[in-house]
Image 1 (cartoon, rainbow, N blue to C red):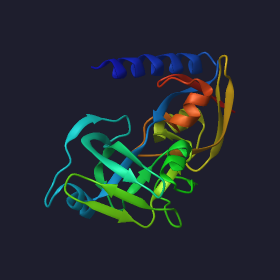
Image 2: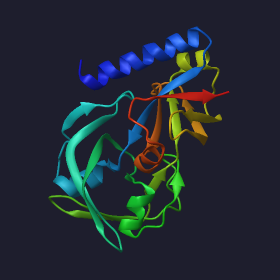
Image 3: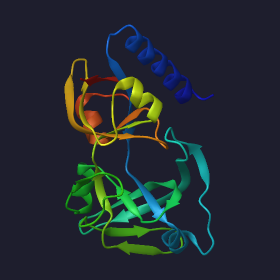
Length: 212
């Protein structure tokens, strides 16, 4: 078990203890850096015919993993190199960046939930074997909470619910409009991007309190 897994296990144990002692409902934070999800056709265009993504490490969300592969993003104003690819392949290519990244690329920032890409801006993705220009699919991910069915029952949450989550400390802040994504394929974790985390002085794995 790696250090990140150990830290997560400790945080989950603390959260369970706090809930059991009626001191609140807590969730570990996950800071989501810029990354891309690729469809099969774009994997082959960027990395070569028949190419298979290289598993680097599992992510907390079931079936999701970080890959060794990286791409460059290019927009009207600039480019960003070394953007991590996440697996497995998806039906549609999606690029998730921060507001700060959008200004660097020259892309109009659109806040969306993952998968909701209609009407979003596009960009060019550059890989070692080729490049792809997507007409849509670039989003600033809306903050959201992953939780499986059993956890949701304990927390009193439902899929699609919108909640508030508090970060305490010297830069205390309440994150509003947090969408709950509950059910199979999810595991307890709140996702926010690097801009939001930096503004709040938030560390990955830090416990956040659900505001009931």
